[in-house]
Length: 173
View 1 (cartoon, rainbow, N blue to C red):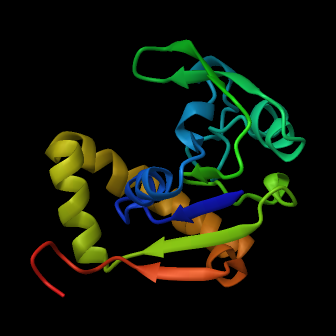
View 2 (cartoon, rainbow, N blue to C red; view 1 turned 120 degrees about the vertical axis):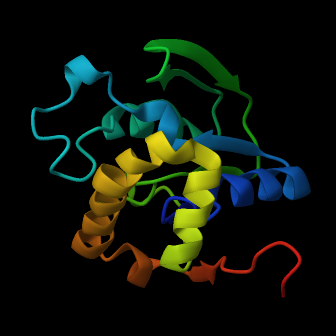
C-alpha cells in the first residue's frame, strides 16, 4: 500500500494514476470518503479533517486490502450528494491518494508514504486552471489553510519515505 498525500494542486491524483498505469493494482481516492454535509461536525470548516469519514475508509478499504480481500465501498460524491458503488479485486499493489491519506487513524496499513509539494505560486496557477476563479477562492480561503494545519499538526511531510517537489512546468526541466 502506497499512500500519497500533499498539497492541493501538487499532483497526487496524477501520480496515483501514473503509478497504477505503470504497475497495475488498485487506486483509491480519499475524495470518495468525504462526509455528507449533514454528517459533518459543526466546526468542519475550522478543523482539518472534520469533513472526512476515516473510519469508513479504514474499514471498507484499508483493512480488506491488508487482508488480501475484495474491496467494496460507497464512494461519496459531494457535488451530486450521492454514493456510487466501487468494487475492486485483490491486487499486489494498492495506492491511496488524496488529502489526508496519511492521517494517524489510517496508520499501520501503508507500506510506503509519499508527500508531494510545490511552490505556492505554481499551486495557485494549477488550482486556477483546474478549478476556475470562483472555486479557487474556496481553496484559498478554506482548503489550503486546512491542509497546512493538518500537515503541521501531524508532521505529515516529516514522516514520509519520499518527498517530491512537483514544481517543474511542462516543457521545463
